[in-house]
Length: 318
Image 1 (cartoon, one colour):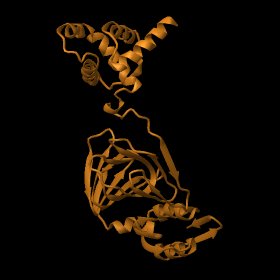
Image 2 (spheres, helix red, strand yellow):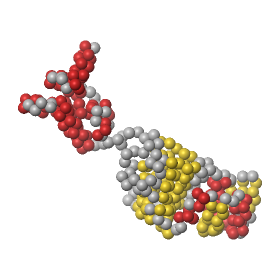
Image 3 (cartoon, helix red, strand yellow):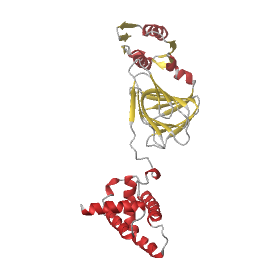
Image 4 (cartoon, rainbow, N blue to C red):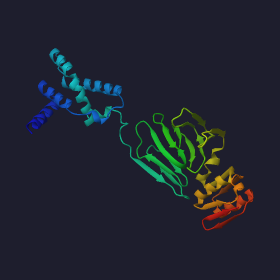
């Protein structure tokens, strides 16, 4: 108890700058007795050494402002203890503002849509995400100082606020989609074989996680990535055809009936069974705006030459 009171009194004098050299040595010995090795403050030894040296210089300027040769010699003998003191000073926040903030824990939010539901999300940087049916977006409530990173399952249209110092990254499946400020559509449902990225404005960088493979897409470019074979294809398209869902439009351009039915299931919250195997690969083009499932199925049946029956939320096709 007596030692604690002594340290407390010395601590007060220390930061009033009226303590003597002996008390400074006392604090140095106390600092060095602490076990700070498990804090994992630094990423590597180089970063640790750089920050420690910087703090030592600041401590020297603070504690030893009297430029006397004797004090200067004593400072060099105190340097090993000052290094330990530097770590503690950083831990308790004395130089918190000068250290990287990448270690701060991010708090994440999550938005989920059900079949037949869409939502609009405004992120902390002002970027706007329109989330399509049966999708999920995970995102930090406040982005870090160096990166804006979100996680997507399903389909979404991104309108990203421009910030050249802080890239925006969408992680979905095996792909990382990196932009600075642009608008683009991403489609990746777990049941789909192909992932789809379409750029509406600006440019977008896409790479396969853990690989050197990458593509740079400009406005009007589409990237199709096969999840099974890892093959990728680039096309020039009309972005409006792939963002029609935002306008309540169902647009099918030479699509397989099986893929069309998956979209209809998410759009109308129904279940569709295709009983004739040959129909699954039949390709159909059709555009419908804000129509009922009965109307859309009727038009698809005419174009695709098949028959169907609706029983509540179950549709049979043959």
